[in-house]
Image 1: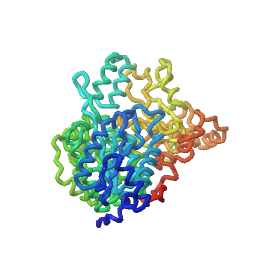
Image 2: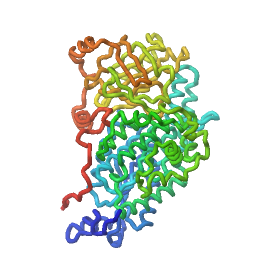
Image 3: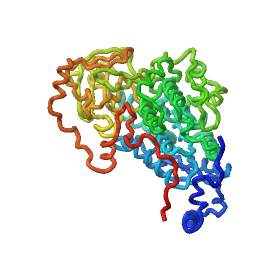
Image 4: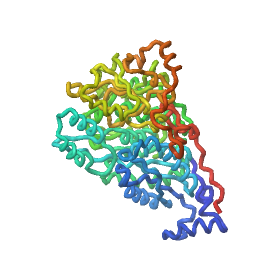
Length: 580
């Protein structure tokens, strides 16, 4: 690609301007100690930072930003760091997913409104990565991502424990009476013992890897531990590369092609990645105009085996994954199976095939070869349809119990997850191992915000009997660190009148994963009669103002990515009108 002359750069409209406006733009910048030479037409690179002490996973990004700045200066650019909204999965309520689209809007509008020629996106925690990609894609200035990296492996009582996954496991052990609550307190510091995001193949690690698979992150960078010096060396390289992206005029629209999304979908299956990748990739595709549907996530992965033995589906953690060779090895193995689009361009300027051809695996227990996979093809995320989910639902097969993949049982229904959590500890709850737990009103509009509550706890009475899994169905999501036989993202959701709203305790529900079916075994005329009955009042009062009201009024359903209907597509990078 041919670069733009200095005068054609966006930043020249600010820093190269004459008269009063040019004086304003340059003069106030100089109060930071910049000399006049930095306004000589060099590329201005924004560093969008989601640093926040309220987002523990991203709390080290100021140091990462300093490394990026070194690289930008080295390459002859001007680095300017700025904050954007930060979404901390571990603290924010009711759910960070309520704010993903708001963060994407902030990234988009901040980048467009300022004198930037390119941008480096610093992310880490679950929703910060897709939100920043969505916002940058909608502006379509040259951009690349630097994720903050995973924590070091958790160490507890002589064994490795994984963030998130250990939370579900150990808390269930306490509920079952097999673990002293004091040990759970001890595990808190043992699980989170360094900076970084979750070190399981949860949503943070999944989206970091998929940013790399899409070509938006430098090859080999997603899995580097947050505290590893190589993370900072990589960030410096990203700063240098950001300047080159501007000079080459290489934009996200050239990277985020249909083939790139297919690579990411297949990579997610090979990783045993998070079900949340589905809703994030659908939303991102909508921003760049790439046709992508929920069914693509099933159709494109039927031949993809699970190659990576990582929690929550396996044994190891992200630190082990990096030492074994990281994502380049996975992509190379997919290439060997004929399942990779090698020609897709990446932010390095090289194609995916070139970037991964020399990758070597240093531990085949962690990253299995394509010829001897960790799990067979078809055990990633599958899409189910039927009378209970006409617009689709998802299930992560590798995290589910094999005996529940074909199942028929009677429903036990709750309208609010809080009510179920109380009932789950009731020793008299009329539940059996064959029961189907249904928790609804947890979708994009119903909660609102589409929370990670789909992997509700197994009833205590079953745990006491040695039952560790039960079929659970919800219009909500599940943490990527979670596990279990959980059908998620049921669409349409109950709050908009989907069939899930018509289910009653005692109804028969049938699942057949091989046939991709999820059915409510109730006669059509009975369902029609239920639908004609007066609608119950909303479980919770709908929001009346602010962002939450805007969200509820405009959010799309799970099968469309849960973006806002007016945010699909992009608005470009045109220089706005003068401010003075």
